[in-house]
Image (cartoon, rainbow, N blue to C red; front, side):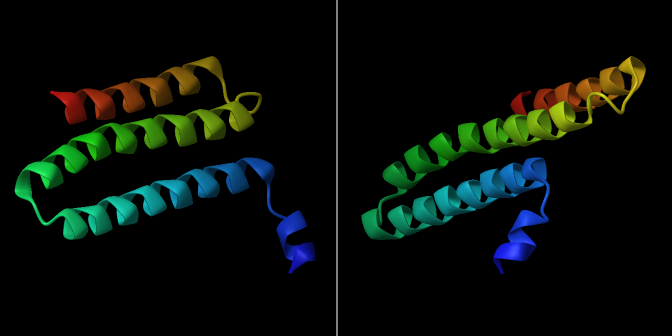
Length: 93
């Protein structure tokens, strides 16, 4: 098992770790909604989750882009940045 973990790229491991953390936060929020059993509190918890999702997206994309920055041309990086910006624009508008 240890040998398998050493063969994983550190950027991929960080990105997967961020997604696992996001999943843990989402699961915890769902359980809190059930525990509180109140629509107002559930909406407040859901509002907090609305900030978590895009933040995780930005962080994981940044990790991936930083690890690929030396392999990609500036124009490709600009297209990727534009795509991420459009995703965030679509989420918030």
